[in-house]
Length: 168
Image 1 (cartoon, rainbow, N blue to C red):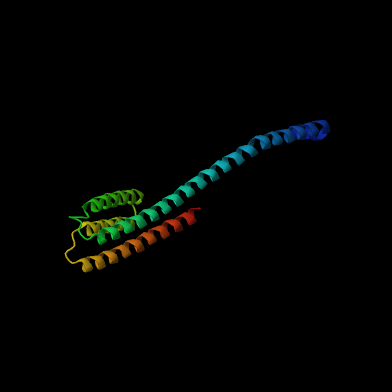
Image 2: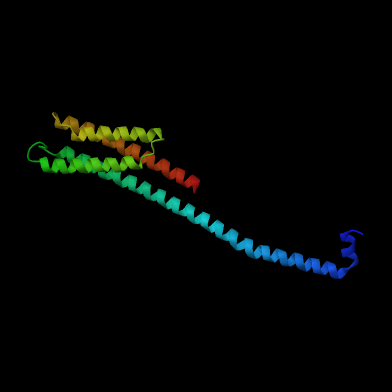
């Protein structure tokens, strides 16, 4: 006689097996349930931290680009950078270099449009620091280039936010 036939013949054994199976199920549920909840919580928490960090980086990028644009425009308004405005010129030039370096650290070099953005920043930096022979022509060209920096920077921000929404 096989085991199943014995269990049917002896109802007490069947009840004992059902109780044992029920107890084992309860033990597994008590251990596995909270463990799975904890693991899911940790994964969600980690994802939340990553999303928040990326949002902060996007905001930082936007703020740095805005500061860089402001410094470039201030540099363009200096009347005599080699003379009476020399100290202001040096201070703003240092600030420009620092801002460009910080932005460079936030750039994803694997992205072609972001590399192009860096090249554009180099152009703006050069234009801002170069001596101007024809002030009005230089200002118009600089403003046009700065507008391009703003437009491309906004496209980078939009792309990053879009990627963030897709992943989140």
